[in-house]
Length: 234
Ligand SMILES: [Zn+2]
Image (cartoon, rainbow, N blue to C red; front, side):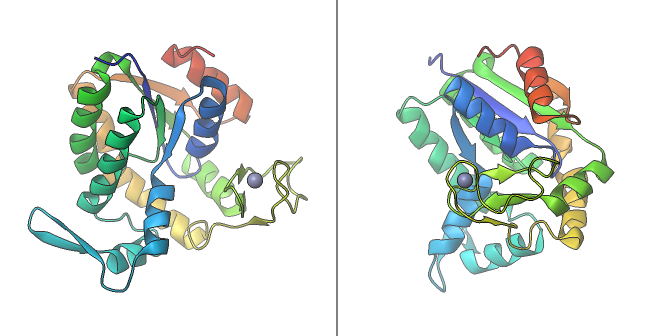
């Protein structure tokens, strides 16, 4: 049994999952497993009629990509397939990991958590729910930008509002295409309520280590809360 660890960050759009995952990744040397990046990469490279067959059903990259752009969650079997492939690969390489944005549905949780348990051991899995209000979610998402080179998330605040380039690598800052438009954010919030939140009950019922953290306030403050409640060590 491996003594490597897995941290899973859950929370609504704009909770800062990506930012906190980056921090954990840098401070604790965890591999940042970003589901949206895996999806975006697969949507960049597919050809016209590419598909995957899962349990006798075909999933077309084109359909999944169309859903993604509208703010609707991709079909769970499709996402799970890509994610599981990547997780097995990382475990082989001996990586500690932090996941943000996965599992995103109860279906995914039921497939992923047993795999993670098998690969890493239940006692080495920590889940953290980062909570923010719907108003905060909308406000944060509509102003967020990322850098075009490394996708560094640039949160909106007094210090960053006039920035045009990434302070780390100098690449231009852009909005995430489609995903952070107000109409799409509302869809994402509803999807979160209906499809992601049920994961919490599943985690409790299956005795996974679950921690809740207030996601409002500065990035540094939230990071401190995550370390404290989850018992992670810098
Ligand atoms: Zn950057």
